[in-house]
Image 1 (cartoon, one colour):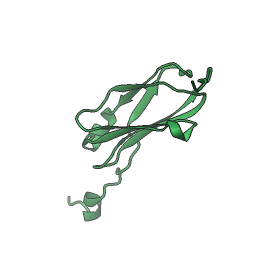
Image 2 (cartoon, one colour; image 1 turned 90 degrees about the horizontal axis):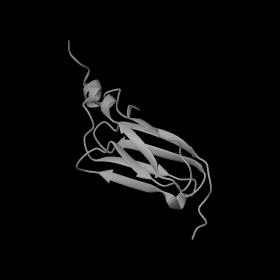
Image 3 (cartoon, helix red, strand yellow; image 1 turned 90 degrees about the vertical axis):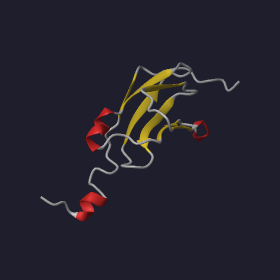
Image 4 (cartoon, one colour; image 1 turned 45 degrees about the vertical axis):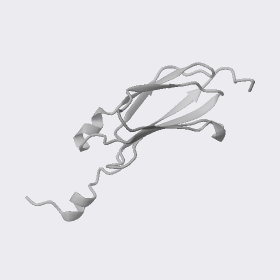
Length: 114
């Protein structure tokens, strides 16, 4: 059985959402641990480094991007500085561009900015 050239060059799973993210109950000014499960990517050839984790806060100035070139993190911590909706994205930068995301609603007290 032969494969179509286009299926080999650009398989249908390119850019698939297969990375799973999970966390505990978030509150402003408290560390939030995000657990990353990369294992579903194994069925598509696994994650090839570099990989990236991005955190977008309600305030655009609080954007964070971490690039991993040697090993995939199993989790990471961040401290929300304010209430609101945060978006966390984990993705493979090149290769199959596999990704996953998680929206986090943060409650609690805001930082005074001091």
